[in-house]
Length: 279
Image 1: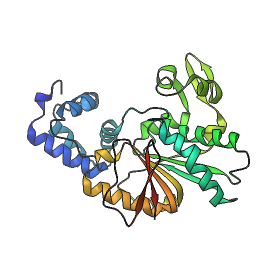
Image 2: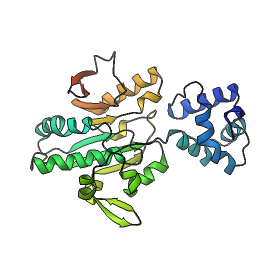
Image 3: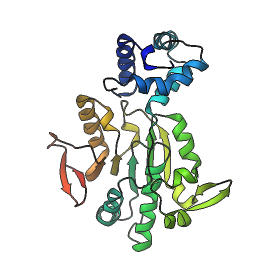
């Protein structure tokens, strides 16, 4: 697969259908180049010359590591620390004070539904730490962040909590770096155990059941729904609603909007930023 010309329109349609059924992602038209760039190495390692060969091999042995490797390669996306900034300011200055009053001595539970290599859940944990330092005693119970992703490779990185300086430079301030990380040598930095202990990483496909996750005060599902069809997006949002406590908050990505769900959510204007309160 050295060029996109090696993928025929028919092959691309078959692969699009496979990917959508496997993980919900709907590849846009003319995305052959993305398939080529992300799957070329996997195909070479397995001696597969065409996308048709790859699909046949997965169909022949659907439980093989090959299927997982393909989904992993197609769903791994770059991420940032404190992405878009204002959601974390809203969490610290508006949501946590309100939620803390409701909770009393009950634990705070937050779900990061597209955890990737850990930047979002660890950013949430740092935000909680900042809130606790500014308002000692406001959170009387424990704090837990459940961080899920479909990709085993990114979760392995996230669980380590160890990053190169290049990755840390993407959105992390020098102040937070020195406050919440310690250098391990060779240009790598390890996240503070206090920040890391709050986060529990789990492998999960958003197409599957959320019933084992429990109930949450806050859900972050940012920059992932844009990859799903409109029907699937609505289904996921309904099921996320079922995981939120009444009055709990949903954070979506900057380019994502929630519409036609008045029975489930109400919009909260934060200026800047919008969040959604579960009815």
